[in-house]
Length: 112
Length: 111
Image 1 (cartoon, rainbow over the protein chains, first blue to last red):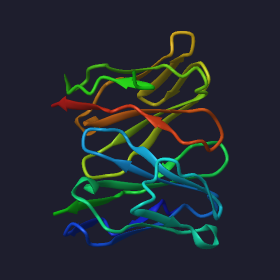
Image 2 (image 1 turned 45 degrees about the vertical axis):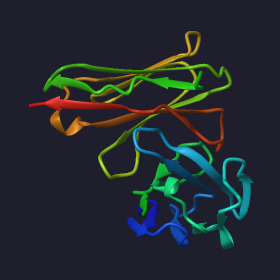
Image 3 (image 1 turned 135 degrees about the vertical axis):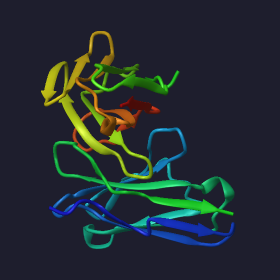
Image 4 (image 1 turned 90 degrees about the horizontal axis):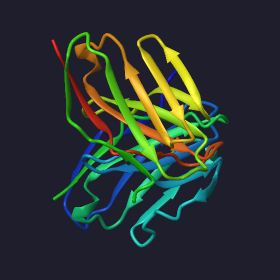
């Protein structure tokens, strides 16, 4: 069974540029999460989707971040414009019903 | 006070040692408790998943949950250099609610 797929794995951009991350969850997993992991910290939730619906996005900085999950499968997270403080690892995870969350490899973003 | 506290280490042990990792938490609503292992530049990998209090064993790994003390532990027996990684505790209220993570403990097992 394929795991959670994320791309790109690494991204380097100049500040004020836009950037997008893509995630494909484990097949059949209805819940998808985007987490942010800063260096030396545990992941922190940005947004959670139940199928197509964003049910928990209180930690998403909506002035510059947006996300979508069309058709309830894969998802895209966008930052526009990026700031220096956005440099971090962006992790996608998915789960079915029991709450066991499985993570992808992450996208490491560097903003210069 | 953060919801989940975890000593970041680093922790260095000789090969074959028993490793004890732990976390404390403050939210009594947490029902699900997990341990993830994260290698450098990789995503977190689910190691152990426990519901409510009690022990769970899987090979060299044992997870313990003491809800009365709000304390969870992960024991690694016969530690190997390949166990060198950051170990993250995580907990949730139930279902597919978001997990709250500790900072992670960095472990090095020296051959």
